[in-house]
Length: 345
Image (cartoon, rainbow, N blue to C red; front, side):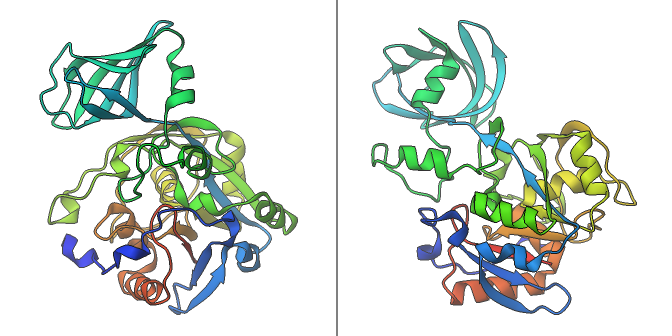
C-alpha cells in the first residue's frame, strides 16, 4: 500500500495557529460511515448524536511543559524538547531529548538554562536524540513548571516571547487531564467543556478515562513508500478495572482521538473484551485492520500521509475521508491540533 495514496491538498492558511476562543464552539463535521453523509455542526451539539448507553473513551494524559530554551557554550540559543525521563534524584534528572540546533555539540558540553539550572551533554543517542543531565539549584520539576513551555507542534508558529506562553499552557491541555507524561496533546479532547460533559452525563452517556502518554512518535513523518514498512514508536498506556468494566458494558464505544483508539485496539481480544492493564503499544492501524472495540471516532483533522490520517481512513474508508477532507477545505474548517474536529459514526 503506497503512502502517496494518503495525500490531500491543504491551503496553509487553514492550519489553526490558535485555539477557538471557546472550547466547545469549534466546528464539528458529522460523518456517517454507511451512507457517507456529511453534516456541519458545532462541537457543543455532540450529545445530540449520542444515545444512552454510549461510552466516550478519553485520554486523560497530561501534557508536560516539555520545551525549554538554553545557551550553547558558544552563546548561541538552543531549544530543548524533553522526551523520556531516564533517571531522577533529589539533585538531578537525566532525560532523553531533542536539541535544535545541535550542530557542534559534544559530550560534556554544558548548556546554560538560567543562573540556577544547567544541563550537561552525556551522550548522543541517535541522529536526533541526546541524553542530558539537568542540575538545578532547586528541584528540576519546579524549574520545569515555572520555565517550561507548551510543546506545540512545529506547524504552530510561536516566537520565544510573544505573550502566548500562559494561554498555550492552558489550551494545549484537555480539561480532564490528570496523569503527566505526554509531550503532545490528545487533541480531540481539547474541545470538551464542563458544560458538554455535564450534558453528556445527563443523557446517560458515560465518560471512561484511559491513559496513553503521547510521545515523540506523534511528530514523526512516515519515511517509507510502503506504509506496511512503517514502525511506530512505543507509548505507555494504562487502563483500570473501573474503566474496563464501563467499556465492556457499553452500547457503543466512541474513542475520543487516535490515542484512545490505538489503546483500545491494542488490548481488545477477538470479541472486543478488554481487561485492566498497563504496558506499551506500537500498534500502527492501517487498511486491513479489523476494529474489535471502537464503534465511533471523534478526531481532529490530521496531516496528509501521517499515521493518524491513515488510521482515520482505515476506520471510515479512504474514499469517505478524502471526500470529508475536501469538504472541510472547501468549507474553511481549521486543521490540526488547534483546529476543528469530526465525529465519525
